[in-house]
Image (cartoon, rainbow, N blue to C red):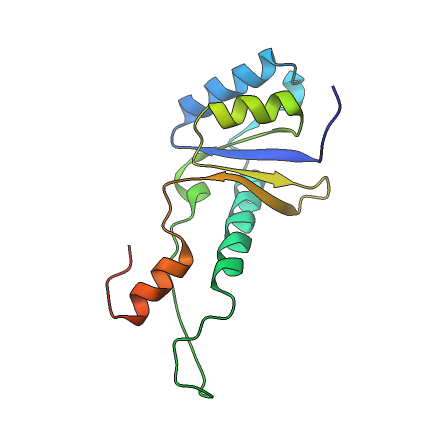
Length: 141
């Protein structure tokens, strides 16, 4: 079984869902010693991936007058702060299992720990929508 890239970090709404997905990846061929559940470093990596994705969505937006200084503070709901992470080596079978296990999000992470892509994300309001709502004076949420 060859790795595509470093790791997959999935975030689940509950610890039991993460454990169930870990069992499925183990049955699909992942080495038991390579599976991590609830590791704080994986949570930070997922947060980095989510922030990378959000920043890419907001680039070029401005909330101030043309030519003026702009300061925007946004409260973004970060999946890993409310869920349980599961990290497994990035393989084809692991991707298949994780996508079918209905995580909140799945980040693809390079072997050096750098988030490089988001395979799946659900249930979180995109930053650009929050930004537009803030510009119009609406409540963020």
